Amino acid sequence: MFRKVWLFSVGLTLSASMALAGTTGDRKDLQLFKDIANSVNRYTHFTIFDDVNATVTDGVVTLSGKVTMPYKRDDIMKRVADVAGVIEVRDDIEVLPVSSFDDRLRYQIARSIYSNPNFWNYAIGPNPSIHIIVDHGHVNLTGVVNNETDRMLARSLVDHFGVMSVKNDLKTTAELREAREKP
Image (cartoon, rainbow, N blue to C red; front, side, top):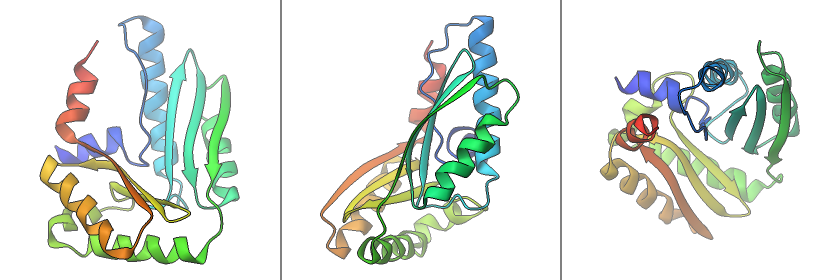
């Protein structure tokens, strides 16, 4: 169950901001979103240090988020443009600045989270569900966790590294399920 929710809703931490009113066009947009998520999920250079979000409206895709390298933004844009049904791709993806301090924080935080036994099940698969975005020492956690306890624990593991600030945008599977069920 978690894996199915994870693949649909995060994968690449690609989240949909779509209002589904039940029309044929909306269903096509939802299928297009799923195809885009699969395409980006299979991109081998997409890591836990990148976060990409997408909205789809009448075949027009708007990508936003942050990636660690410019070539990732370009590759993701090309992959999305090649998905059948995409009419236009708008790029709002930001490239994070090169910083050895940020790189060190990324790896320390990732080791702290994914070496914790509570998070071993999240590390399974090619694209773990918790993403760690570090920008000038400011950390943003994105992705999906099973419950509120895991969300709070992940947040607390970040505080040990002298970060400037922490934003916890992790969603629980219950929150995702609730959001999908809203009309």
